[in-house]
Image 1: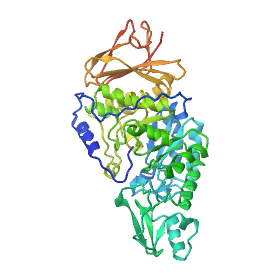
Image 2: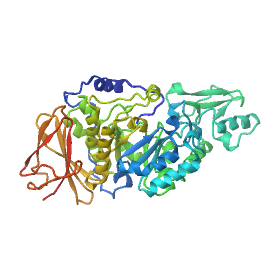
Image 3: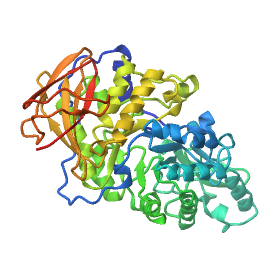
Image 4: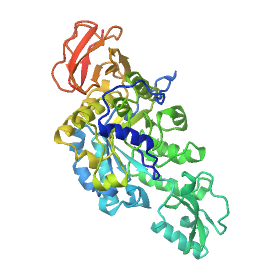
Length: 498
């Protein structure tokens, strides 16, 4: 889920063009851009809460005016649809005309179109009672220049106050040639000294308002106060706007969220991805993109069906989730969407050439492989056809109802082929009591896919259980196991082991 205010969408545009034109039939050799992380030789810790659920649903609540009371009423339906994590972009009072509502106007209230802070607290509490999590996309690096908090700071500064909470939250100067704070959290064109006629001084501006200076204790203190306020409402995690692997940012971004309240936390940066997985883990993040942040146009599945990688490249990228699991973390990926202003205003979201089945296969591959997965935009989800929604929901429900499909479950590739349009894997629950065999047909037409079960530990004489469709799967009567799959089809089977 890419949320940077300055967007460089060249790579995303290439993939989008391939999808739009339907140029997805050929599976190309693995790209040199395919990233994988070597499995860490570290002892496996007990699984976390976020390794034992799946199914994200993100709300652009400020932009689309989603009422927290209405979402609370819909919790049972969302859970029945396979959703276990609610994400909000963002929960505080944000300017919907800037950055789709994540621009902070008041950190200590909610946007009026969403309800009240009590509505928010009730939503979080009710979600928790139903075994669901609540996470947020959150800006903790600047405040909107029109925020009442900053307006008060300007007035206090003009009156000669240099020590009030408001004034000391920001950085001021009367000399515009002074050096800017060093941890700027933005490209050079978006950080500067800005003249305030009200204050009669310059303030450090980052993005669209006064920035929080990570070298200034009083500024950091306000950031911590903001975070504690939202953690006290029960928030289970944050995707931080921008984010830097800098020790000055670490306490607010990682240490405080993980220790102030004791529940497991989903903590990540918007731009974090598998190429930097070890550094992200060492910094303290608990999740990152399984590929990388590509503006919601690209994930591991789109890279496969657009020909950027082949099935071997896919396996290399799925190993990124294996590394995360080995260090007690997760990776995440979303179904393709787009959050640029024109897409939001026109409800114009990307789709696959055969969206009705490919988006469902995308879910089965990404969620089925142990990657935290879901929809990055509720507004897009509710515009899908009833059939697509029902089948996509059933994938997430199937994943959440079977421990062998959760992120905590182990994963091993099973040979399938030989033409490069099929893929298979074995998933085994953390407690070893359930094993699943997943098989995918990535070609547009129906196909008989044969997998080699020798050496997998799967019993070669059995009747598998079809976890997704219900009933029974094709019988296994030897190491060469064949299934009939439609174009972009898949099967999720519970199997016995020897």
